Length: 391
Image (cartoon, rainbow, N blue to C red; front, top):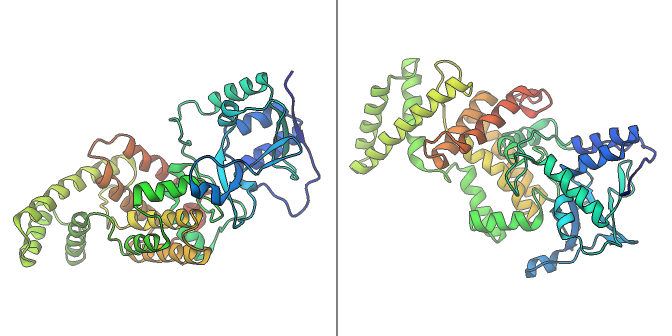
């Protein structure tokens, strides 16, 4: 028989389950349900710690989280405070099972907390971890998390910082991470560094600040969609209703003529207008827009990514907490200037993301905005139902 043991400790008044994972573990511990604890862990992110300088040097760094015959991991809500020489590495029960080298070691989860769990790691235990992990992640692509709306109970829940983090919630839900966490990691230190390096060309604090400034200026995305949307918004203000499609197209051509833009610019804007109209029709059918609604602006995509870019930069230690928080608050304030509600913001974000990546396929990229939109608009525990758009 394999051994798993949840050690029920006295719950102090200062301790509370930080995320849904810790809450589910606490409930299983309260029932004396060791199998239930293991099922929760099988679907959860786990975190260990390694030396930062060894990660920076490249290659695998040995875990520092080994003590008294145990490899120590923590669920994300029980991560340790940030330490200069040590960084977090994300893992899972399945990953640990596949790489476990020493059957004499045990696994200790969340030591010193009311949701502490001790697991032996003999070959039959590892097979069980793999089996439960496969069930927990069924239907989820390898190396990805399921889309989830996760709230950190001890994170910002009101005020400008919470509002700004809420503007990044669409991408946080897509990535399956907590929307209101501004702690040591987003994913983990090494993976966040790799994301910034490979997708953003960002390896230094200066790189990060330049990209952050570009996002907050809404200048990271292509210019043509925003140009066309601004022309339509100007006509809408003047006429009181959105213009007919042909009037919008003609007004864009005239505006480009006034700017002495080349014919190729008009051709591109006309192509973008056709794409925008197709996406808006689908948005109305799926509830991303109300009947007759149109997208006000697509700058939400840069602002929403800017919130997460700030979190990645803080995780990768390219900026401090105060700088990251200021950028997030600024992104929230800019979003309020351009939109009148969470729903409007969401439609703008969705359009910006889809114009950039979807290729008019209405496939996985489309699902990556529609599902998080619905979760955030419907879940009363999430930021869009608990944080007012207006201050």
